[in-house]
Image (cartoon, rainbow, N blue to C red; front, side, top):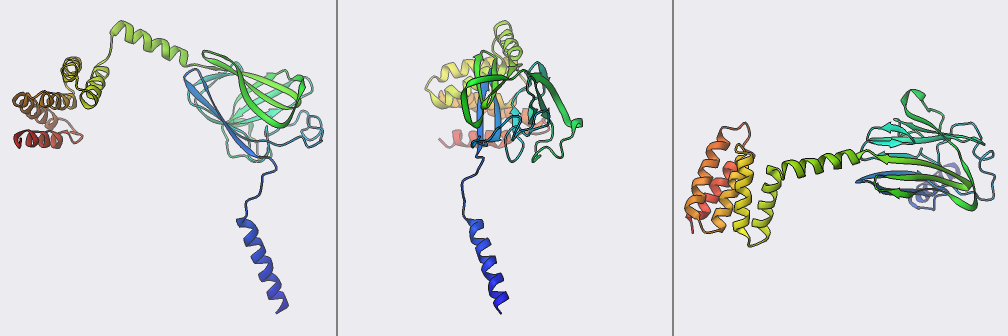
Length: 280
């Protein structure tokens, strides 16, 4: 009987303590930084020095380190980038390092669910670069990852702990995309979708329906097969009080949409618009 009572007490204690949240010895953190026009996100844990010798002590030299505590640090790139001089495709990676007295090796690995370095697989590496660490006068108690030295399309990722600093430059590859977007806009002018979206915005949010009609006409001229644009022209004509022409355009839209593989619901929209106009 005593044994049963003791086991019950242990079970209850374990259950209750499992429900109580306590502070983490190495708190988790997430940092999101925009570089260029896309974000870089880092999820990591922040161990403290706590009067211990860190590099060469708690973190052994020349051995792989999870670069934090608990689950391996994860870094996510929204767009393709250049990480420490190496091209990296957008996506998520674990960030490992091999600290040395005079040189650090920084690693990006496809496996993001590692706890510690015991199951680290070099076959999944996408980046392996060498970085020279710096000794700083400023002491960092809790392991810290942050960004600085910003330029239009680059920034420096910094690893800081105790009196050690490691910097890695990250360069966004979106500059080429922005360049191409400007070239297309300034040489070809706004696209059909630009005029279409502008026409929808103006007809739904302003009283400038004449301008909306002008823009939807340009959009349709650039993309005559777009029956969904025709539907919005019918809406704009109705807003302008030109119901007869609005019905004609709506009926034409139904005919065009009927020949498409998918009408995306525009046939029903047109029928409802026609019914609304005729019921007035």
